[in-house]
Amino acid sequence: MELKHGISHNKSQFIHQLFQVLLVGLTIGMTRTVVPALAESDFGVPKNSFVLLSSFVVAFGLVKGAMNFVAGRLSERIGRKQVLLLGWLVALPIPVMIWFAPSWSWVVAATVLLGVNQGLTWSMTQTSKLDITRLEERGLTLGLNEFSGYVGVALAGIATAYMASHFGARQGILIFGMTVIVLALVLTQIWVKDTLPWAKAEAAKHAPGAVQTMRPRYPQGVSSNPSTKEIFTLMSWRDKRLMALSQAGLVEKFVDALVWIFYPVFLYQKGVSLPNVGWIIGFYGFVWGGSQLFTGRLSDRVGRHQLNVWGMWICGAGVAAMMLGEGVAWWASSAAISGFGMALLYPNLSAAVADISHPSWRGSAIGIYRFWRDLGYGIGALGLGLAAHFTGQMQAAFWFVSLSMFASGALLWWLGEETHPRLNPAQ
Image 1 (spheres, helix red, strand yellow):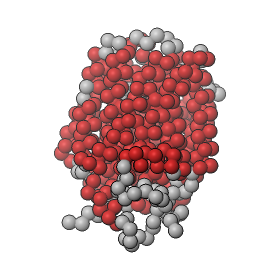
Image 2 (image 1 turned 90 degrees about the vertical axis):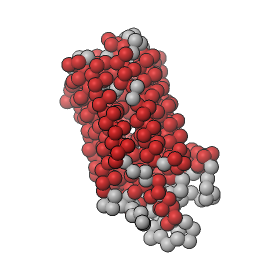
Image 3 (image 1 turned 120 degrees about the vertical axis):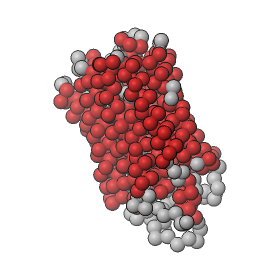
Image 4 (image 1 turned 30 degrees about the vertical axis):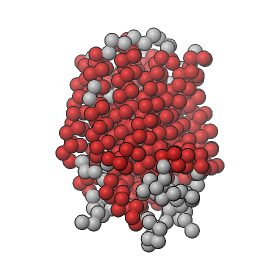
């Protein structure tokens, strides 16, 4: 039977994959409000120990980046579904470890497992949807993917804040986390299909001599069956377009590291209640997630490049704005501005990578892009932790991230180009 590409032809599987990424977002979101805000009172982190507080996100970023790299290559050997299942199995101990944690080191260890889980599961939900959809639906596909994931992050942050207020931080995370992870395992086993056959069918259509209406500007001089080293060097420095996209992906994660580590602490120390902290950070997640319903689709029409560059700069402006005013309404609005900037760049950096990566090695290319992108959690968390430590001011971390976003956006504008094959096709 011929495998057809397109959302309409694969609607049921597309919806199953969207629900999977919602569950992935719920899993990471359960740690993003309660754990940093209550690190001192519930998990024994000394006050103003900025580097120690950042350590769990440093660990997460290093591990998730590496697992993205592994997931892409592994999925081309054993299939997407098996990698997704493995990711959910790894997640099972996480809520139990946080519930039992006698010290902060247990939270860091749980976050290492979370990095493995997120690297395997989020990579596969994204890659699987790209496998079964058409080229001209790529922006829409990634927009819907990230919408589902980051709405899940926002919902989990709010839900666990209320559950922590009612049950306590540890028990609230245990109940929420085990429910989500067990549900994800069951649904993956029963309803998710392996989409690797769709990727192979698409690769055949892009073979030399095949008739195509739009030919993307694939990198030149790449072998038909490139090694991991060849793809890694291509993504990292040999192709300036892919390098520009990878560095932008890395730096934009500085923002998410800041939101994860210091937004809850900053707001909590300003006297904001834990549920309101959840709502302020939730504005960031809801605007980021909700706006991607149209920013991904918009890039299919007007291109990726300008949206990516402006997204970097708008996101950086939202971070700076957090320092320039006071009050719940101001902080929520600033968080929303950063969320909108992320919505412009987040699906479209990935879409740009997918545009110019050949289907036969796209899974690996996306995995390596996601390696660099999520390494940004580790590098960013370490950088903002050191900035706060050496100045003695948490605000220094916000300025470090904001300036990094403006500089990275300028580098992307200089080295990048439009990748949409309809707007900038190969000759």
